[in-house]
Image (cartoon, rainbow, N blue to C red):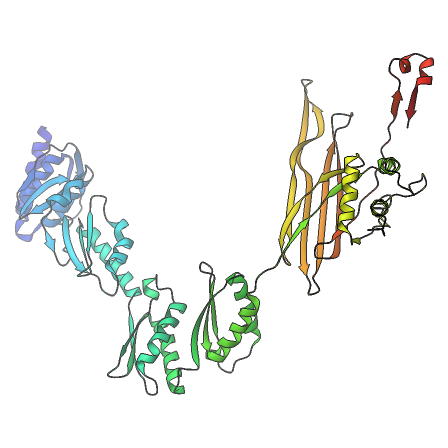
Amino acid sequence: MKFNKILLLVIFLTIISFAKEEIVNINFKNLQIMDLVKITSKVINKNILLTNDIKGKVDFISNKPVSRDDILNILIYTLETKGYTIVDNEGILRIVRINDAAKYNRTVVNETIDTYQVITEVFSVENSNVDYVSSKVRHLISSSAKLVTDKESNSIVITDFAGNIKTIKKVIDLIAMDNEKHIEIIKLVNLQASSIQAELTNMAKALYNEKIEKEKVSILVNKDTNSVMLIGKKQNVSYLTDYVKDVDSQGSLVAKSVEVIRLKNVESKNILTMLNGILANKQYKDVKDKPYVAADEESNTLILMGAKDEIGYFKEVIEKLDIDRQQVYVEAKIIEINEDKVKEVGLKYGMQGFGANQKVGLGTFSSKLNGGNDVATVDLTNIGSIGGLNIDTMKKGLSLGASLNLLNQNGAADIVSEPSILCINNKASTIYVGATKSIKTGSTTNSGGNVQDTYKREDIGLTLKIKPRISNANKVTLEIETKLEEAEETATNDQPDTYKRELTTTAIVNNGENVILGGYIKSKEGSTVDKIPFLGDIPILGTLFRNTVE
């Protein structure tokens, strides 16, 4: 403490010797902050109110004299490290916490002063909306600062450190400069100003986003002078100015129009792509004659702007494209048929023509049921053989349905799946019914003798993909892809076998008709034993009372 007293004495003597020149030589080390407050008060000759005991020490090393104001700034910098600052209350400096500085500040200025204290400044914003500007600079103010806006005067009130306010004002000036409005006044010769205002307004809305302030173009008319005033971004105003002058020179606005078309069936972005393709291939003497086309996906609308005859042409194209989309409903049946059981059903119901050497088909079976012509001459023993795929139209769907139902009831036919799908004309649709199964792919034995199995996940089920195309003759062309996958457990290594049956074809059918697409042959070997109970189990003699069929 004795050292500090000696140091203070040296500082005071140095200040007095330079008092007339308004500069001081000052150096100190390990000086208590409270002592620095006292020194500053004497140097600047102002009272400083201190209500809290601020702990800490500070060093300052200077190789040249500093001004009296710099002494105050040194104190302010030091106080900031402790969460304090100085505010000026009618000539009395008061040390307060930074977070409370806005409440105590009484210095209000119209122009930023050169100080490091907290001040309140009011300034107007030119060429831009005050709320828009404040939203861009609010993050620049100090955590304890305050910023409010006044819409009526388009002004901002900020309470912050003077240096910070300077930075904020520079940013605001740059924003306002970028958003500077350009004004163009066009005196019309051939047109009435009032007649062109609506067209220009619609045009400006179509070209420029009104939600972005600097892109917006305001359009005013003066009937007395028959002139149009355009206010907005210079580039945007220049484009509209050229348009107005061009239309006025032609002496008529009738040739130009803006059309907004709301689409009912087709997405606007798809139509826009087609229209742009047409525009790219059309030749225009003047680029200004080329229509402007835009799409709004939210409202599903198209905006057309240009000569009326061009707009009429494109409207006609749009009407032809924006038509109802027809739909096709498809029902499918995936069926497995047991040839031997089909023969048994034929014998059971007394059908003729099912001899041991005769091939049995759905068409043949349906014919026997109905006593008429074959519905489809599709031989089940040949369906799916690579060289013998048949696609025959079912001209009597009820006969086919009756045949399948009878076979199903007697165990000769198994309906694996009955998917149905609704498709939009000329657009592919897919349905998948199945499950994702874990398929064992192998096993490994680690050094400890433990067996680790590896699996992979596979989709097992039915996939049906159909793309319909409706023709004028009430016929439907179907592009069909079917894939049926199965997993069958095996006795070896617990690794199932997977089977895939896949078909890709194109069929043409009338509305409401059935069609058989194809199939494949799969043979299964097995034996069936029929016996008389008890007697058939007797050794040797039991063979007389049982029958084995392979």
